[in-house]
Length: 314
Image (cartoon, rainbow, N blue to C red):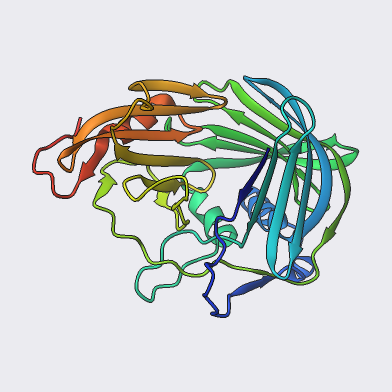
């Protein structure tokens, strides 16, 4: 099975000249010194280095091995992840460097790597925790601890030569390891000697509904969420603080394929499901993400329809 994503790509017919980031400038920058500088550098490295790798992912569903590749073709990134055991699945993504938020009037909209690092500084405590050796390469460990109980913690092991993350650990609100992802072989990563396109500025869509509550720091993401698999009655929006992401789906309750209200476990993620009267119809709300279950439930319970007079806040 092949799954292809083209999120962040410009739609056909848009011939406007995109903004670009020149990856060659990374060679000219001084080596990072602070934890925040290392984190921002790793974000840029994820866009600018071409490589092939082998990796393992360890989660609640066991251990899976993968083959990974990342390259840039005419300014557009292409990522491929191929599972090497279990069901044959290939994930492929093509896209451009995303932006931090929707465009508002003529205000500037930062690209994700530049804006995210600054945004995260007020939500997490970042700390460098010494060197280690992974995949036969020297790495620097970066600990990222949430300043509240609304999100999970992270541990990154960054390649000292490229700043690519060679190992990532996700920690739940109790500090327990939820998932480990580690590159075991990294084959000759090369800096792309050219420019990578930034996504175009996107105007905020006018939805009749919105979540009245989100965890501090979560921003609506400027990504296309329309899908050929869903009709216009299915609403979908994405929110993120720069590391943690949640997806919110809203659709009428019709037919036999509805989910049971409550909390569902989906691998390392959870999904909160509610059936509520919104906009004159019974609608199913699904909030998914790698976040504490109580947070997902609170977001689902806060969804409001702009034409509803009744107060449905918890």
